[in-house]
Amino acid sequence: MSIFDVLNLIGGLCLFLFGMNVMGAALERRTGSKLQGILSKLTTNKIAGLLTGLGVTAVIQSSSATTVMVVGFVNSGLMTLKQAIHVIMGANIGTTVTAWVLSLSGISSDNLFVQLLKPTSFTPILALIGVVLYMFCKSDKKKDIGTILLGFAVLMFGMDTMTGAVSGLKDIPAFQELFIMFKNPILGVLAGAVLTAIIQSSSASVGILQALAMTGQVSYGAAIPIIMGQNIGTCITAILSSFGTNRNAKRSALVHLCFNVIGTVVWLSVFSIINYTIAPALFNEPASLSGIAVAHSVFNIAGTLLMLPMTSFLEKLAYKLVPETKIPDTIVELDDRLLATPAVALERCHTLAVDMATEAIGAMKISLRCLTSYDPELAKSVRDAEEKTDHYEDIIGTYLVKLSTNKVSDRDSAEAAMLLKVIGDLERISDHAKNLIASAEEMKTKGLTFSEEANGELTVLSNALDEILSLTYKSFVNNDIQSATTVEPLEQVIDKLKEMMRNKHILRLQQGSCSIETGFVWSDILTNLARTSDHCSNIAGCLIDSHERNLNLHESLRIMKAYSPYFKESYTAFAAKYLPHEINS
Image 1 (cartoon, helix red, strand yellow):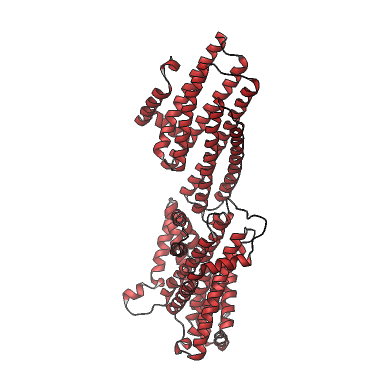
Image 2 (cartoon, helix red, strand yellow):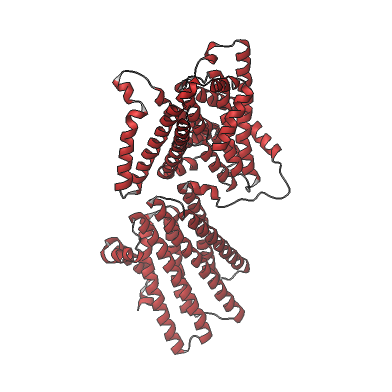
């Protein structure tokens, strides 16, 4: 083996690892919206969790990425430790898909159809399609598909280059002796574990083993222990990812390690007993690419079947290794590990934004009650809610900025921009709720009261605001565009109602039926209520923009007001409801 073969081997390995990384990242971006749907359906059911882990890993081609994601979910409180165990088991099976894809390189036949199945036959075509999609298409979706095809092509070219570079090793006695040494199961496991820990991908290390197997010097007796060790080595990624997490997240990473170590010890013992007692001739035969894929799948499936009935034992073992303490476990609301899968990270942001909306809109509704019936406990709850919304705005906004530094799709970018706008409006709604509480307390402290006429007007305005808050909440939480389009007509009615009430108030001042001091409070209340309806309009407008893929909020609202028959119908209905004759006159 010459120095040029070594350089080719290094180049092939780099292409292989780079192609796998590029393809996996593009697959994550392209399938992100589906991943969040899959992960949202997690249950404590063993089979459901297992299939989830299997499906996600098969799609993104990395059990390490899936396990790191699971650690992030547990750290964020999105998943229990028991759920995590089932998903991790499924991930171990899902990672075997890569070996089967790579095994296509070993196809040999004179049949034209069979030859076309070899990656070397169709990879150049995929590379050409990928380049065209990546370089000449503007759509993010097409660019991602092009990146996936290019990543796969680079991966397969790297595999082919490695195979060609190591072909000369079959004539080197030292190489033959090396794999004779690996027939010692313990050394084989250690070799597989160390190699996989270094490159942090069991799929990649299996691919390297398959390339070496093309020399004909890797027997099944040497390959099987190495495959077992590779499953242990892949745990290093999750272990490193668990640093700085809460105890449950650390337990989920350790479960991954314990699961693979126990499975390896059990099945390695079985393998060794069979090898030293029966000594099947198969163990001395050269391993093929498809044979390694079979061995990889059989071992991972067997390990899962062994441990699936023992999930409670794994959970107890994890609690033994990471015991409870008197200090309560902290929940990280937005875990940076989820940033690797933008669609999942955005879904988590949206969930917290819904919690924020519940706090902000709930606080505003409570403050409306306090205007007519002040209660110190309710006032405190409004201030507490305002502090929570400030916290939510801070963490969600910071997280979305971090997310924007990653490569995200146009759809995810638009979703992030929409959420940034919405959380700003929600925070301002909670501020206005706090301001209303201050006005209610001022009236109570100074003994101020509104006239019967003013109270009647305030009741009408409060009812209108309560309705617009409900419509806004419904439209945001349920992504209900129909409700969102109803918000703007009501906001217009509220603006008109506010102006009418302000004019009526000026008349009362002129007639001497209202004091100047009460008038200041009245003006503050009207301003806060009107601005709250403006923020509701902004939120609904953002949802409509997101649905229409339009970033110009004011233009969307202008078009809706000018040309939408539904807008005019809704405005007329709300005007009839909230602009009665006695106020409208």
